[in-house]
Length: 473
Ligand code: SAH
Ligand code: SF4
Ligand code: F3S
Image 1: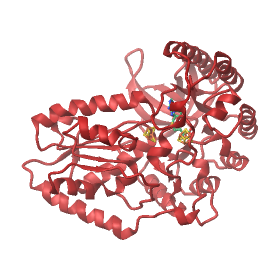
Image 2 (image 1 turned 90 degrees about the horizontal axis):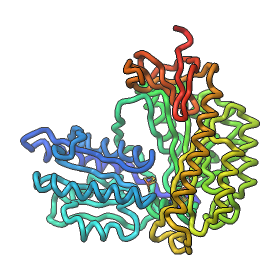
Image 3 (image 1 turned 90 degrees about the vertical axis):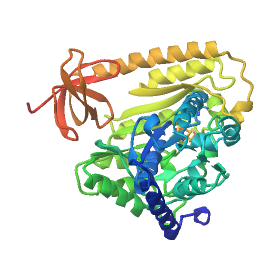
Image 4 (image 1 turned 60 degrees about the vertical axis):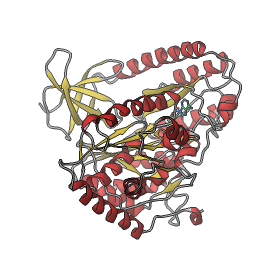
């Protein structure tokens, strides 16, 4: 396996840094301080990639803005997971024709998963002539080089080779302020669920070396952040491509052993690979939050098979039972797709009954969206959008009731939370927002320092949030 794993040599990364410095000189000659806008769509993995893109831009001397009209470079980091995500991106890229008209020197970059989706680069080439540079996730580490190439020539640059991907260490990172941090532990996906575009756009699974992950975790903790989320499309595959005999549970233990007051969580776990060792490790490691995002997608075995998920309803229920027996206070969340091609009413009822049986704390629910190039997009689908929407509404109604009931069960309990934001309560007074280790939102009346762990007593709840009072006040 390890023979297929490509690590980008350190001198290649240094070459990119040298290009950053060259570009820095070039941009410094502009009449004003150069500004960049990075617009991110999609999942946390994309957020983490954008932190790298911002890191490279900062090395090129850019400051940052949220206003595309004043940006000298706009980088749109895109998502292709559902058609809706693509339409939003294309709408916003379309609107950039106006900012480019007002500022002919503006550089427009489209990168990320959608750039790599089948046929999309061609579409951008034809329909968005003002886009300067397009590259996919596997080419991201070469952003400085690609940008320099664009600036040197009159031709637009399209870099979307179909490649399995590599591991590039040593890229600069620029995180936004806050108490949380994303930490990618692996890239790509080998699972090829039949509905999903991710394996086509993100390449094959490859893990970062544990020492690199630990080094980044140390930096994050030293920087004062308290909430680390380890990221991978299927973190349970971590380490399979490494020479060291290390798996995801081992990695969690190593992070748990780092000094400091922090909480570590992770996503996503594929149910077929979630092991007893993982659950035991979670139960034993005091800094690992007892929360697991375990997407089941559908409650019916025929549908699960057609999705190529690799587990049955019964396998899933047994895993949940095992996890809960080891962690009685486990917070469990999941993803569901409604309206997979050919899913019947009865098959959908199996999804609903699974919901009632497991009683998830929260769900991320999606209506199936055909992704060109995936097997499911070629399957027969006799059900209408309206039928799927009606099922979706029933699903939401069921889950909202369960979430509200589960939240009510918290009333009277004392929980450890991490303060992470400020807001205004319903009565108009200031409040502090916080998250439990399990990721539940807690509103606390009054202004409190951020990034602090507190014990709060839960006094009230809604479908979406809990209200609490600090214990020691
Ligand atoms: N790697 C993660 C999921 C990444 S995509 C995992 O396997 O759990 C996030 C979620 O988007 C998926 O869990 C799935 O529920 C949903 N999704 C993916 N492709 C989809 C599609 N074509 N239509 C609708 N939802 C989709
Ligand atoms: Fe997509 Fe399946 Fe891979 Fe998740 S595990 S990214 S759903 S192919
Ligand atoms: Fe994430 Fe969207 Fe890509 S969900 S992996 S940004 S297709």
